[in-house]
Image 1 (cartoon, helix red, strand yellow):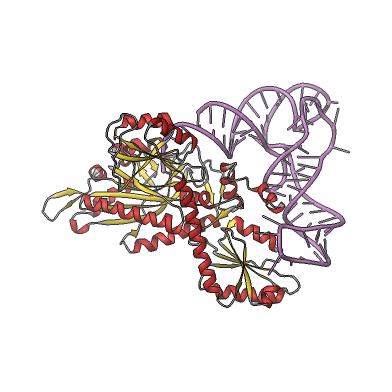
Image 2: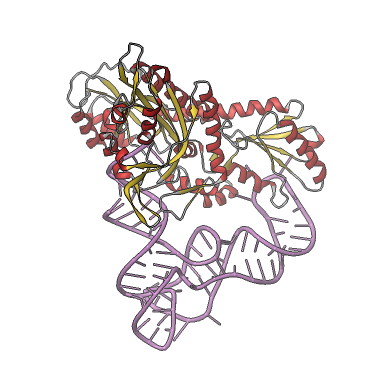
Amino acid sequence: MSTESQAFVKEIPSKAEAFSDWYTAVCLKAELADYSPVRGCMVVRPYGYALWEGIQRWLDERFKATGHVNAYFPLFVPESYLKKEAEHVEGFAPQVAWVTHGGDEELAERLAVRPTSEAIILPMYAKWIQSYRDLPVLLLQWNSVVRWEKATRLFLRTAEFLWHEGHTAHATLEEADQECLTILEIYRQLLEDVLAIPVLTGKKPDSEKFAGADWTYTLEALMPDRQAIQAGTSHFLGQNFARAFNVKFLDRDNTEKYVWSTSWAVTTRLIGSLVMTHGDDRGLALPPKIAPVQVVIVPILGKAGAEVLAAARALAARLGPVARVKLDDRDEYTPGWKFNDWEMRGVPVRLEIGPRDVASNQAVLVKRTGGGKETVSLDAIESRVSAALDEVQRTMFEQARAFRDAHIVTAATLDALEAAIRDRRGFVRTDWCGTQSCEDAIRERTGASPRVIPLDDRPSGTCPVCGKPATATVYYARAY
RNA sequence: CGGGGCGUAGCGCAGCCUGGUAGCGCGUCUGGUUUGGGACCAGAAGGUCGCCGGUUCGAGUCCGGCCGCCCCGACCA
């Protein structure tokens, strides 16, 4: 390791040796977020928010094709509404922040600061939906929710977090379930194709489903500390909320029916997952598709400064149409300082241009994923930069997938399951008879929880606890 | 909510055991030389040592209380 990077390590601890400290340092140093005066609530700084905006842009564009539209519902949920769905309130009650006063006056009914919006959206659906012609309702909401967490981590678990929640209502079970699967696939694309985070998709076992849902679909990613993280969820709510809030419609057969509803969300936790998945000892590393700055141009000034700067400006202008480009023409920092600074901020591709390059119509290209310096001709610089961005995107996903795949093992016995979780962490695949008692036995023995049951599951073995024929294959892991 | 650690300059820390003029590195400011992996020289500014109380001639240091934060567990997106 060079002396330069040793100096750098003093600011960012080793990812391999001090993962938690490394993670926090990267979030703070790369200026993604900061701690706020409000306990458990983070401040999302502009650079971190730009990542969220990237996710917003992609999802808004993607959902245009499916007919979902954005709306907004109140921050406050009257207690009586939250209580209408029994499982729902039971699940969320321990984490709800309550408003008890308006000005000096105590409220007749206290208001929950929404931990999720079903209980304030479904009453409106009851008002809006009369006929099968009013269905489906496909609404989205960008907002924040509050869950009074005991322990918080930047992005991964904060008392208030930004998210994107969808709430739909349908005429049939099949259509609502298909909606859940459609969303799951959109989220998979976001995770894998944009954020370059490989995920296992499937269903949650009942013990892990959303409070009030009939079943929950999930996307599970594996972080470098080999703990699983739930990266997104899509809930089939059945008719539970429709009954609780009396959301009925008159169907074609002239009978009144409850709607079938779904809800689903991804959160700013995605940013935390992104940081953990791709970052290294030099700091943040961003997949090009989400990077606010895809290409940074660092001019090597000096005696021929004016000429180099003009060439750098021309290069930035040429690349503008093919990439999000930043020209770092600050005079007060040296090139070496800028190299480290932009690497720490995760910029996927760097172009250096100095007197030597200007003289020979070239630039030096460096990818955040490594591979050293590459001299490239300016003749076809647009296509080379586009290709380099694709390469970085692909490399990041492939590295993450290789890591994930290397940490999936199958265990047929309780002993093997325990050993795998203890020694290897990661995902451990096992068969399951479907009973809660056998699941609890595994939880207790391993400290891991069941994360996901694959969609195309075809169980063939026997339950490692009771020996009965399996009804499902389950991936266990320790989880965030 | 349990276990551990930490609050001293903008940031990172030393000093505390053994009380006696507030220190170091980075950053900042000024001037100059520099610029292909965190530049160099010279000069300068910057502090109610987390808060409250006690002991003492004297407290960053010792004692008591409080507050805040971080890390590790248990619960959760």
